Length: 419
Image (cartoon, rainbow, N blue to C red; front, side):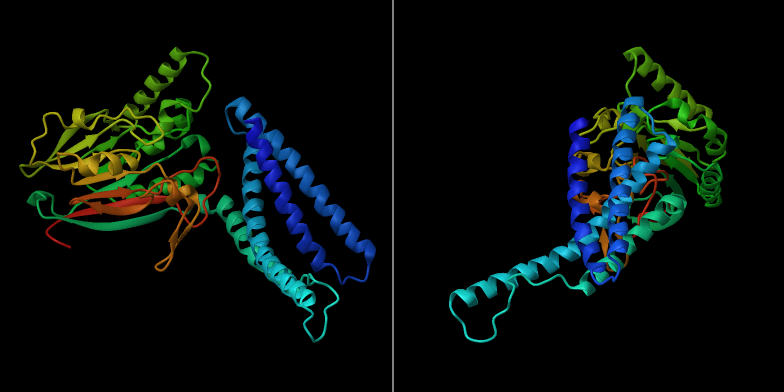
């Protein structure tokens, strides 16, 4: 952890040194030398004080195993400044590449004795308007991150999709499912906003409700203040849930293996207390008007994470031609196992990625850092006549905010036929 913090400090120092070059250009024409020095000293005193506070808060955060409000503030502020600095520096970098290319051209002109006016300096000065443009452009992510930490993390968005299947039982034509994932109750800091999100879930009035893992960050106690609220979610055909990687307490320091196991048992009881049927490598048959579909749920299975889930076990006793819906927390399970499994699972519902809580989703542009880790990081995917839906998550963790990738409530309508 110490090495990680030192690397962050080094990167941040370099970025801020680069930003400072732009700041100097912005103030170069000021008449008052004293005013410039005040700005320079203020910049470095603030930055170095912030960096020290960030380093201390991160150390305390991991030593104490839980994020204090102060530590979380430093993390949010650090990420906000980091992205802002990167955007500012990228603009300056483009200018510097042009400046260096110009300097090389001038050097060869002098060396070859080209006629014409000779420039006094090989390297052109920085242009003020470029630094002004960099400042204006960098203000966009800065404002976006401030909004994301204050409001965006609770900007619940309903995503509706109609899914068509040729072999869907007639009775389930028009059947609706509401899915939420990655509650991460240990990160919440506004009860009022969480309750508003839960009311939006309830307002969908779907036939079935499913939760696809990560109820807590690590500790079962984190969900306890919200159990009544989440327990009020009801659906005519039931409420079902699975475990996510964080639910196993794998990121906490436990005094013993027994304490970790006790925490897990307590968490399982909380699922039951909220009225959620926790599926642990098993299935249930959902019956409607004499016809059935199989709802399967597996423990966490993810590339690079816990791989406890056993799809074959969950399929035990399920007839091959039964319509199947699988709850599996990590979408990499679908990529590596489910989509080529001998038994066709028609629809898999996952979460886990959060869309990295940062990105851009428009009709023309869809990007998130999550795509460099997960082939399918949000929304629908299809392969081998099998569908995957990846929920963007209800909560947040690490970065206490969301920018461009808003918390999601998914509503899926099953229809018989072709799209």
